[in-house]
Length: 352
View 1 (spheres, rainbow, N blue to C red):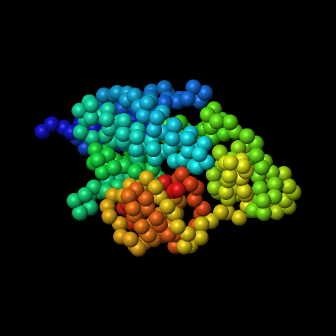
View 2: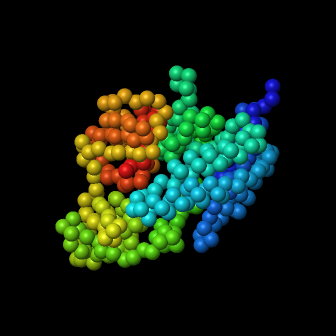
C-alpha cells in the first residue's frame, strides 16, 4: 500500500523534530516544512537561523525539506489582528489566531496543494476518537499542554492534522531527541508571541499608533503616578507604570481597569478578581459538540491557568454566556476563554 504522506511543520525546535522522527518511524512518508511568516522591518528576526535548524533536523532524519510561504496569512490574520486589538483597548491572543490561520490554515492549504494526506505539528495536545468523532484533548504533560491555543480549530482542520508528541512529557521528548542524536535536542524552547518571539509591546505598538503618557489612578480616582499609554496595559499587569506617591507598604500595584478615551489606568494593591456569580460573554465561539445548558464545565482564560468551574447559561449563534462559580483571577477583554470536560477541549470564544 502507498504510504500516507505527512507534511510536518518543522520550526527548528525539538518538539516538531521529534514529531517528524516519530512519524517516520511509524511508517509515514514524511516531509519537513518550514513555515515562513511576516516580520515587521523594525523587528530583529532570526527566521533564517530557525530555518537552518529545521533543515539540519530534516537532513538528520533524511527527509525532504520544503518552505511554506505564509507571510500574507500571518500579516493579514495575525499581525493586523494583534495591532487592531491593542488599539481598540483589548488584549489579543495572537497564538490562537496563528494556529487557526497559519499552522492549521495556510500550512494545510500548502500541504493539500502538494498532495499530502496530513499535516503534523509539535503541539502538546492530543486528538482522540470519542463515539466515532475526533476531538481535541489535553496533552499528557499538564505543564506544557497547548490545547488552549488550539480550541478554535474546526473539525475539518483537526481531521487533517496529526499531533505526535501530545501523548508524552517534554522531559521524555528531549530524551528521545537526544537518543536519536537530533541536532536540536537541547535547544531552548521558544518564548513570546507565535513566530515573533519576545517583543516589547510598547515599542511594537508605537510603530502603528501614538502612545501618550497618562495618569495612573487609585480606585478613589486620585492620581498616584504615570503610565506610558493606556492601550498597552492589561488587567492584572503589575509593571510598566510608575507610582509617584509615597507608599511604605512596598506591596505591588495591579492594573484593575483602563480607559483608552481618557488615557488612564486604575491600579490597586489587591489582585483584581471576578466574583462568583459574575457572568462572561464569549463571542466568535466554536463548540465541538452540543453542551447542556445549566451544566458545569472547567474553564481557562489564559495559558497554564489552573482551571476553574463555570456554569453554561446560554448558547446562541456564536455567543456563549457562562457564570463563574467561585472567585478567580480577573479576565481581560479580548483574551480567549476555553471550556473543558476533564481532558476534552469543548471549544471556547473571545471574552467580550
